[in-house]
Image (cartoon, rainbow, N blue to C red; front, side, top):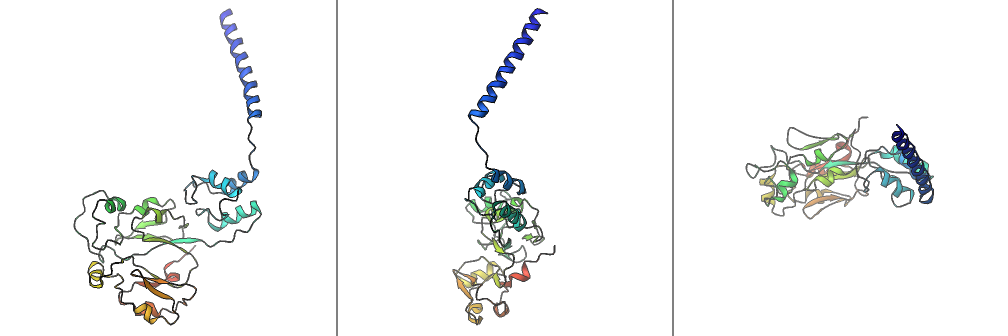
Amino acid sequence: MKTILITLIVSFGLAFLLGILLGLFKKIFYIPVDEKIAKVREVLPGANCGACGYPGCDAFAAAVAAGEAPVNGCAAGGPSVAAKVGKVLGVSADSVKNVAVRTCQGGNTIAKDKGSYVGVKSCSAAKTLGINGTKQCSFGCMGFGDCVEACKFDALHMGENGLPIVNYDTCTGCGMCVSACPQGIMVLVPENRKGSIALCSNRNPVKTAVFKQCKSACIKCGKCEKTCRYDAIHVINGIPLVQYDKCTSCKECIEACPTKVLTLVEGLVKVTQ
């Protein structure tokens, strides 16, 4: 019994001593926390998706408070979170939400396959196996859904035609699908953008080969460029590129395109909620 009492007394004594030492260490090595960081972190959604360019929300909050990251850098939170962060820091949070757009129409009935693919069902894997994709168009969507897997907001799903479909009600413009696509066919555009956009990534300069590879590809005819009265569209490196400060959404280039590569962004990006 005496041994037990001594053991208990020694244990409590050690615990008391350790408590005092921990308290002293806490005071000696205390690092003050910026109140702004805590407040910014509180209004962030906590997705830790990494789309802001930082490892997580904690790191992003610290960067914003230090002026190293933009107030509207949280793609997952969008304009509403940007406004809250701006309010915490006392700065303007004016921002335009970006959304993802798929710049390829080469679905499984449009673009021809090279043959039967038996490798890992991944776009990035097929891209790196030395065959440069599974379709005759080496620039188009391979349809394995790497972008869908990367999306943390349920904003992408694979359609019956083997192409990813964007749900613009849930798309946050985080850019994760853009990073995941080895073909570079997923791009971010401002949600309020107006004007033409080319839904093709085939840069093959051989016109006859392009049409054999995909029925909905740009054949580099230049009709869109010749038709535009506002000098707003030019075929650069095999793809029609639009200068949006000149484009009026007149649709003349769209009507002139023989393979229907062009469409209006405002008709493509539709938010219902």
